[in-house]
Length: 474
Image 1 (cartoon, rainbow, N blue to C red):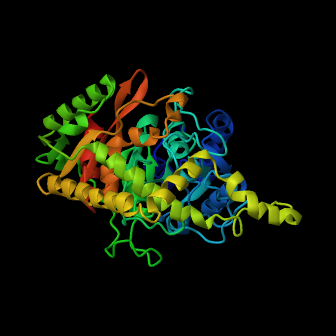
Image 2 (cartoon, rainbow, N blue to C red):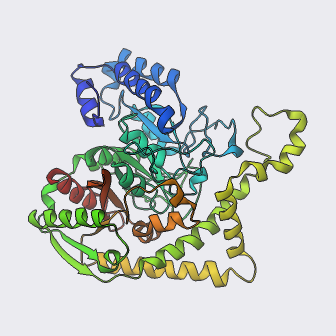
Image 3 (tube, helix red, strand yellow):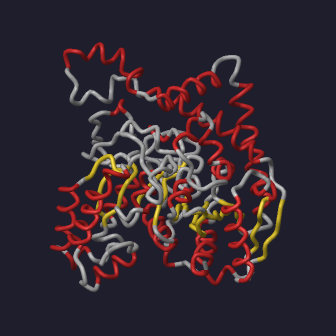
């Protein structure tokens, strides 16, 4: 039986020769075939390639078994460049685009012996928190098909939650790993900005984007972070320090004596009763484990929402300028109509949400307005970072509910600021470049709730240890 096994459990079975990589891979491909039509978590499924890689592992078991992910299949958000595999960013404008190079993150996964099952659905160009803006259709929440899975990494979270893969890779700009993990009942780990390379990740907000794992438990997230983190010559924002083996250093006993802060202003937001009840229950468990809990003031979280609205859209406006119809999206097109395609592709290729964000960002960067909007937004962003750093000088980490609500319905996403409101508890830490992890901590109305741990820059091990301690005792 392979249902709901973690990476580490699967690896253990592989090493004991209780199961083969081919059997594991075929199991998840069969799960995708059975469930994806209903959930729409995958855009592309790599059937032949995945089976070929699994056979290679089995045939070269002695040489490959020492690799950390040797023989383990994973899903990848369709925002990572994958050589010779369709990469769409869930947008019509990238029809038929197959990159000629591999992103640093997926290259590290492959070098560690991992197998790519397929590319998962997302909000188009990561613009949204629902996965409803995808050109390939909305992803559904495995816990309730009438609910949203969150986003933008909704396909990755839904694939893990529905056991269509043991783990997946996503990205976060301001909640896009933590929020879908909260709504789908998975673990989402957002590294410090610069801990993981962005090379080969189709850019949304260049000063915010962070690749990270979505998994079934904390240990698997630590394992994947160990694989994908580290300095990259192709990304000058990555830290020049040694990559860490987070999974080997997990120590849940370190929760004893840990100083944990709870921002008062976070709890003053409109948080659903079930979400708040499960959070307070988690706080009591942490206290019993020996953590010291303190309530602290913090800058109004609505400021983080305002900063994200301006800063991210400004960077989106710049990053999407490259999709002008002259370099991407020509595959499969009638070349005789290429001129008209050049003229029309930006209008027909971008969905409503990317257009909205480009227009807002272009306005905030335009002459006469950049000082009033973008510059002021960056100044407030610095204040948010300083405020969080000040708290973390006295505490080991910060905790709060991951999202104010359980998974919402499609109609809730009609609000243009839906994403900002759904991510309000995550935005400040993303703007400050801090690491954070979200883990499930119960249910409300049969839907998952979650708690997040936010740490100091490069303090991933601390939040992993704290999350592991709570996970073991929930």
